[in-house]
Amino acid sequence: MSKHEKYDTHQKALALNLDPTIFGSFAEIGAGQEVARWFLRVGGASGTVAKTISAYDKEVSDHLYGIGTRYVSKPRLQAMLEAEWVQLLGQLQPSRGVDTKFFSFVDTVSARNYAGTNDCHGWVGLRFQTKPCGAPNEIILHINLRDPGNLGQQEALGFLGVNLIDAAYQALGSAEEFLASVFEDLGLERVEIDFLECSGPAFENWDRSEIHTFLVTGGYAEAVVFPADNQLLPANELLYKQVLVLAPGAFDSVSQLHANLVADTLAQLPNEELQEGKGRLGLFCLSIADARGEGRKIPVKQIPNHVKTLQKLNYGVMLFRARELYKISAYVNRYTQSRIHFAIGLTVLLRVLDDRYKDLPGTLLEGIARLFMQNVRVSVYPMAAEEVRRHVDVAGLKGWRWKETNGMIAADDLHPPEPLDHLYQYLLSSGFIMPEKPAMR
Image (cartoon, rainbow, N blue to C red):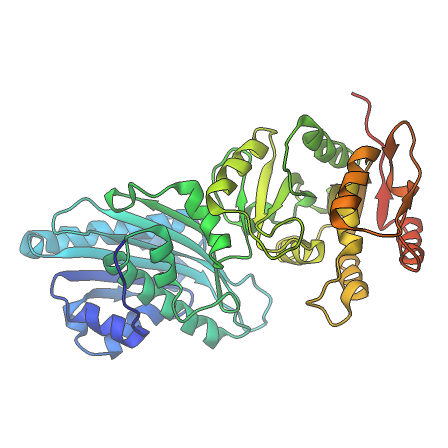
C-alpha cells in the first residue's frame, strides 16, 4: 500500500498544477465553482485547467448534457462526465495525449437554498487516466452536505473535490487509503459520503461491497443502504416519502422468521399512512456496533456476507454506525415524514429499555423521549422464553419478570423492574409499543 503524505488543500491543488502530466476540465453546477477555484487561485492553473464551466441555467444545461433527467441525479452526472470527457479528448488528445493523463471533474449539487428548505446533497464524479493514453477510470460519489449554511457547504465541497482529484493520482493503494485522503480536512459534521461507485483498471482489485461497508465503518457516513436487489443507491433515493418498517437486530443467525416479522408488520400498516406516503418498504437494520454495547465493532470483512445472507430473505439492509433506535429513526427522518415502524423481537426491546444512553444528559428518559417524539411505533413480536432467559442472563439484567404462554413471552407479558415498569406500561397503553402475535403460516 502506498504511503500518501498529508498535505492541506492549497498544497494539493498547487502540486497538481505544477505536474505537467495531469490536465483536465471542470464542470460544476449548483454550489459555485468551488473546486475549480482552488486551482485558479493557488497559482499555475494553466498547468492543470483546460476548461471550467458552470451551467446554472437549466436550458443551457439541457443543451450541453441532454434532457430527461433530474438536475441533481446520477444520470445527470453521468451525462456531464461523458460530454466533458469526449470534448476534452477530442480537442486535446491529438496534440498532447502521448504525455498527458487527462481527467474530467464534474459535480451537480443542491446546496442550501435561501429559504433553507431543500435537501442539501449532490453527486460528484471524476473520470481520469493513470497513464497517458490509458483506459479511463471513473469514480462517482453521492454526498450529503451537513454544514448549516450555504457558504460552509461550498467550502466543504471545494475541499472534497480537490481531495478527490489528488487521491486519484496519489492514493489508490486501497479503498481505505483512498477514502482517508478524500475525507481529509472534513468530518461527518460537514460531509457524508453514502454512495461510492468505481470502475476501471485502477479499481479492479477493490471489492464493491466492502467499499460500501467501509463508508460506515471508516466514519464517512452515518448509514448506507444495500437494497434487496443489491443495486446500490443512496438512502435519500430509496427512503424518500416511504412508510418504513425497520427491523434492527444482531442477526447472529438468520431464518425465515426474520422475514416473517417484516412481512407481518408491512401487512398491518394502516391505509391512511400508505395513502400519505409514496409506498411501503421493509428493511433490516444492522449496526457495526457490538450488540452487547461493549464498544466493539463487527469486523469489516464479515459485514458484506452478513448483508448478503439477510438479502436472501428478499429485503434490503441498512448498515448503521449507531445501534440506538432513536438515532436510526432520526437518520431515516431526513428522507421521509411518514411514520416509522420498528419490527423487533423481545430481546431488542430489552436492550432498548436497559440502555443507559450515557451520551444523553437525560439518559434513559431522554433516549425514550427522542425515539417516540419522531412519529415512531414499535411492534414487538414474542420470543421463546428460553431465548429471553438466556439474553437476561448474558446481559446481567436484574428484576425483570414475565409470564409464559406455551413457552413464549409476549411484550405485554413482560415487566421491567420498578420504577421502569410504570413507564413501560404507559408506552404499552398509549400504543407507542404494540405487542404482536405471530401470524399463522
